[in-house]
Image (cartoon, rainbow, N blue to C red; front, side, top):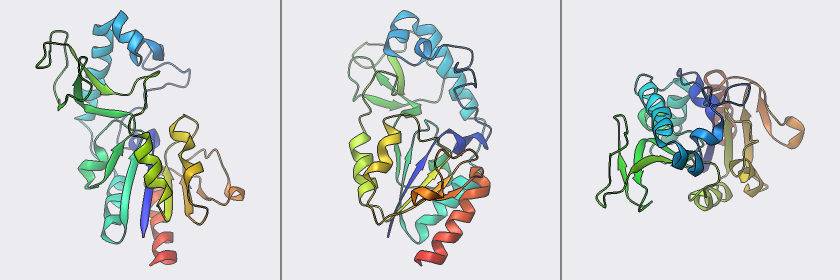
Length: 227
């Protein structure tokens, strides 16, 4: 039996990672287009690099939470694919083996000359850090206005899954929000979020809880219903 898990910012919030976007829509005090768009990077690359350097430093100081570990443990009984909008590596650190990062990865950088030239990166990224072709390196992040290259793979995984778990995401940000429409009509769907955008009337089992509270309960339900 296959499980697809769609995770968002609420999954990592309990590890101490602040969500990028504040309640007023700003990202750490910046307009999103300043720090998360190709245009912003072209206009002020130092600002953009500093923004992601701060995020990277923060990531290296936190640990996976119990919800990350619970999802990793699911692999003992099911084939589990994590499809995450998060750019951290907390799923991997908790032990999940199959993690698809829709929006890129904070601990990787890529060439501005060849987007397929990607490398691991844990230090600050500065102007003058170049790829082997002598072009500036940039964060390996999918910015606004850029294609989501792994979207088709994510759709394929959702289509073949028997169970779908959604954790810590409003399912309001596209294209990721559209993934649920590709679910098999016979799939069981569980939604864990303190402020869920859907309710049980949609044929979804909804738990209006945080990730660390709700995920273990969903896993218990799955074991009772499907094992």
